[in-house]
Amino acid sequence: MAPKKSSKSKSKVPVKASSTPKADPLFPSRPRSFNVGGAIRPAGRDLSRFVRWPKYVRIQRQRAVLYQRLKVPPAVNQFTKAIGKNEAAGVFKLLNNYRPETAAAKKQRQRGAAADAAKGKGKTANVPYQLKFGLKHVTTLVEEKKASLVLIACDVDPIELVLWLPALCRKMEVPFMIVKDKARLGTLVHQKTAAVVALTGVNKEDQSQLKIFQDLGLEKFNKNVDLMRKWGGGIMGLKTQAKLDKRAKAVAAEEAKKAASLKR
Image (cartoon, rainbow, N blue to C red; front, side):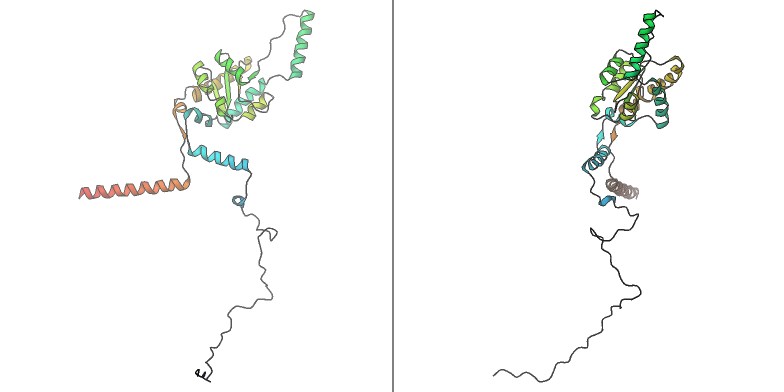
């Protein structure tokens, strides 16, 4: 026969009351949900790192980082050394006086010159000094040493279009400058963008100003040996820089220990 169960009841453990505080009726808890369609996040919080940026923005940022990391040869690196803001303001102020004629202005000038020639008032007026633009045209002017000052945009894409032009200007001893940017040069010549513009001459009252900018171009670009030899890029990220600094300190400490042990 199976053993009988004992009739004694097991001792029950007393259940403790829960220690959770009771909700305050005056200040009820209102948990917020920040999911889509939920509560609004606090104002002023920077959420840009959570944004899925458009592809062109991501490519721009990745390109900027790559340009810092990679070693850049001097021929390309010189395009990062554009003239300063104050110097550029003076140059563009001068060039603004020699913007090319519009089609309507040119037609009106030619009609006036033709009318004067028909009346026998003398020789036709000379064509005023104007900015020359267009890569082939400016190249021809530099090769023939007719250009007085050449301005090259720093952000031409692809850069190979103007990569050789500084070397040509140095060989032909034509003063040149690298300026920001192609859109600003384009505005001078009634275009959206312009890779390069050139001055062939100026009026008598602006010759002293042109001489100043020619000397500036020769000093900063044509005869700047450091610009022709200095490589760019090679800048590591913050984490890599910290790792290299830590490694250098460890090597220095090890060398100091070795030097101290040899002295003993």
